[in-house]
Image (tube, rainbow, N blue to C red; front, side):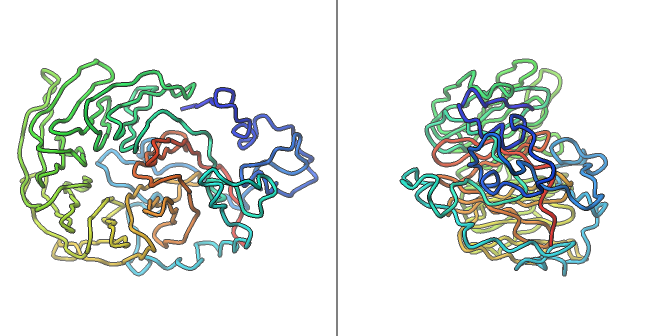
Length: 438
């Protein structure tokens, strides 16, 4: 996907950040431009490098064998660690990097001046280039902000990239789905749904949109347009597994539909009852469905029987997001924790590590960086997204937003997308090289 938004959005920094419009710097100068890293260099030509120094390592950037371009393997929605061949090592490795340690060395300490200007975030800083704090939307040597996409008027609640399409789809609480052209970055269509979008996912060519009392299903290849009835109240979460679509609803039920190729339709399959309050997060992995709820629990469902086989009760607030990584389950909550679960010999899950945050955690997303290393994105309710190496939980960087980020989506070619509470989307890209560890 190639988003060319430089002239469209009037921001020449986008091209400068990726080095395509910058005159070649003096190769004798090996210093990287500080202002380029902060995303605000206005010198042309600049005497310093607008690219990171090459890694002194022969580590490749190839994806794990068998993984698709979004970082997932064919056998389900289990996010894999490409450096372990399916074995993430003993649980004692979790959290060992907290405080600065990382495999291959310790990341350099940031300067005291590497602090984001809060007035810049709110759009009210009057110092401009003379401000002693950074005017940047992120702190990281690994990523680059390409462009914003503006159009939604309220919270972005879902981002989808259906297979075989060159369009990006986004859903919002403003009761619309927007369609974006991935070549120009322009919004080329708006679908008014008449109700807030609670969630949105894609599976193959299908897009599923959760709205009050229904799910809208669109096939982007055949133009089939369906409305699945059955939910009571808002649909907050959806997932696909074992040829079934699962939807978590406001009344605490999980509804299931089975896909029928003949007729290109979905038939009601089951209603999973157990949660006492709305189901707000779901993920499928290893023939299990994991559901998080406002009742503070995570329930584990066997996909072959559709029966609940375990209830996890360690969280003390709403379980906002669940994620599968190798043989581990990660869950996050407004109780300010991320819990890592592993199966015991009996088959039941238990907590092997708890990561503490300073704020409530809203969403988790796993992806691989340009060197195919696993990275966890952790959105918090202080309007930031933290980046962590796994399994060390060594902090990799931080993204800042105007309001809470509740939607994060992986894209092809090192791209990823975030959507915040103001309705703004942002397009990001992993850099192909980073500053080497000290």
